[in-house]
Image (cartoon, rainbow, N blue to C red; front, side):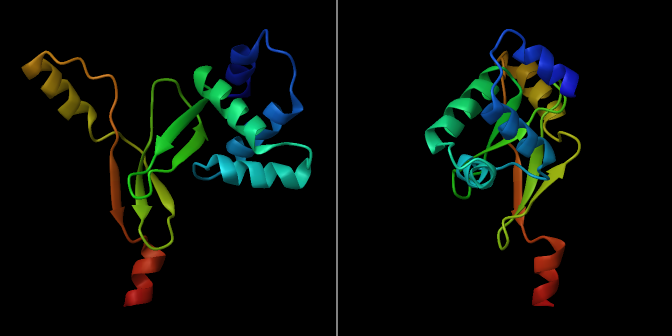
Length: 142
């Protein structure tokens, strides 16, 4: 994956801030908000600004290195490293602790194809999220 990222960054000048953002997102278990990325990186580099992180994220999204995820419950934009250019992630989101658990397979692909075949509509993307309580939060109620 590092090789794929290096290829996409070819021709751009080196940037420690950008490398720090990429590294942080690669280590992350779930997508992160720009503000959370900023706070984490600021601990390492107190000279970085929030606007710099926003610019870096925008550039990484445009280069298809980072993918934007928007959750419906609070409409926050979250970002994650693109692990494979042919796949995308959907999530189960805990309404209590906000934990995001990825769904391995896209359950919408077949439905999307069926709708395209029936309507002639060219679908370019979709969002699919399930909301509920994660195992830990559900056990607290028992």
